Amino acid sequence: MGKPDPESPSDPLRVDAYITEKFQGDGRAHSPATMRAIAQALAKSLEAMEKPGIGGTAMADVQLAATQFGEWTDAKAFGATAGEASAGKKLGQVYTEFVEAYRSVIAAVEASAGNHAEAARRNEGA
Image 1 (cartoon, rainbow, N blue to C red):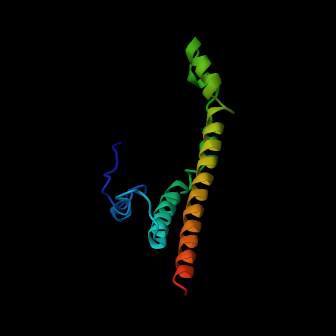
Image 2: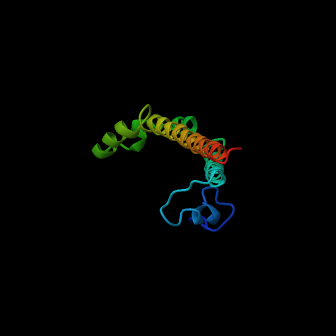
Image 3: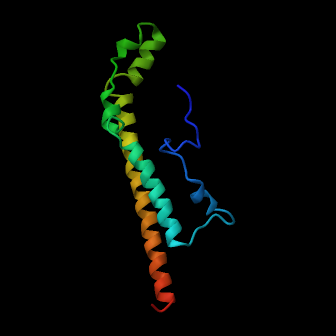
């Protein structure tokens, strides 16, 4: 299993070069169109994270019993940590929290674009 080609359009987490070009200079973007393009790129990545079978509940469903790691001392200790009702559930919870935070970032970028657009409209007297 190799790494996807970063230039491949099939890589759902690839960042479009058009977006990265906007961050030359001081790294800030004040253009509502650029902000919306960034939000759209983030939303596209979010779609890849939310494909069926990838979400937190799917990860939480992958549960191994502690004994499935082995009977030797270190395997038992690892199994107690990573076994059922532990690591899979926590990983699913953390993944779900990450996706929710990612949605919040997208909403914040979109809100910022709206604020900049409104400020520009008012400053131009439109």
